[in-house]
Amino acid sequence: MEWNSPNFRNGTFHNQLPTLLMSADNTMLKVFIKFMRKPKSVNPPGPLPSIRRDLKSPPGPGTTITWFGHSSYLVQMNGLNILVDPVFSSHASPVPIFAKAFAGSNVYGPADMPDIDILIITHNHYDHLDSRTIHALRHRVRAVFTGLGVKPDLIRHGLPAGIITELDWGQSAQLPAGLTLTAAPARHFSGRGVKRNQSLWSSYVLASEKERIYIGGDSGYGPHFKTIGDAYGPFDLAILETGQYNTDWANIHMMPEEAVQAAADLRARAMLPVHWAKFSLAFHPWDEPVRRVLAEAQKTGMPVATPMIGEALVLHQPLPASHWWENVKQP
Image (tube, rainbow, N blue to C red; front, side, top):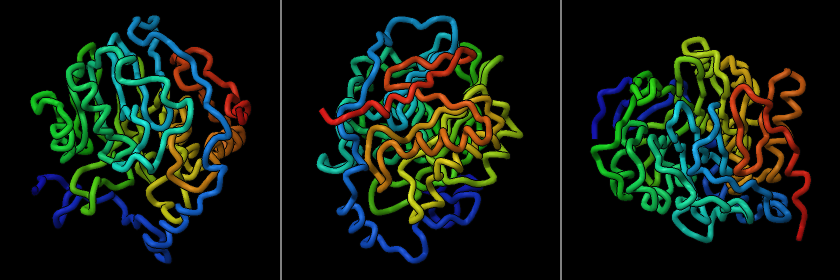
C-alpha cells in the first residue's frame, strides 16, 4: 500500500535520520547465537512484587499512571481511561517459548482493566501489540489511535475498523474531556514478519489544558526529542523506554543514560522508565536499566519515578521512589 506521507518512500516508512537496525559488523545469526547464550542475570531471581488495586474504581482527582511492566500502562486523566501498548500475555513473541514474562509480572490482565476510552498502540512489534490482549479487550474499547498502516493488524485481532484512527507524525486528534493526542517521531522500525517498515512507529503527546505527558514508545536517541520538547513541552512526565538495549542495535533502543538525556531534551519535569521488568529481550541484567537510569539522573537532577507494577503514580504528588528490585530474591 502507498501512503501520502513524507515518512513513506520507495515502499517503506523511514526514520528522520539514517538508522541501521544492527551494527555494521553484525549479522542476525551472530545475534541469535548470543540470545541462545544469554546469562542467567537477564531474569530476576524470584517473582516481582506488585501492588493490587481496583482499577475499575475511579481514581482521585489527579492524573494517575499505573504501570504493568515493560511498556504497558494505564493513564487515567480528566476522567478518561487511556491504555497504552497492553501486553498481558505470558510471552511477547508469536512463539510461546520465547520472551516469556517474568514471574510476578502478570498479576494484571484484561479482566482487571476498566472500560477503555482510548487505546494507544505505538507500533506493531509483539511486545507492544499483543494479539491475545487486543482480542480480549475488543468489546471494551471505545477508540483506538495508532500509526499509519497498523490498522489491519488491529482489525485482524478483533477491533472494529470504525473505531481506529491512524495518525502520521505531526497529526493531532481531539479526544473527549478536552484532551489532545498528537503523534510525534520516534527512531525505530516496525514489522511482525519478514517484511519490515510497512507501518509507522510513533511517540505521542497527550495533553490537557493543564498537563502534558510524553508517551515515548520505542526509540533510539536522536535530535527529535529536543524538537518535540521545543514544540510541545514542557512535559509533566516523560515515559521513556530504558531497557532491552545493546550496542549491536544502539540506533533503535536507547541506553539508560540516553533516556535521561532525552527526558531533559523534552523539558520533562520527571521521567518514568519503562520497557523493562517483564521480558528479557536483550543481554543485560534484568534490573540494570533502572539502576543505570537512577545513577545518571542523580548526576543531572532529573526526578525519576520507580513504581512497582500496579503502584499509582499521581502527577504533582511525590513520585514512587522505592528500590523494590533490590528485594527480589530467590524463593
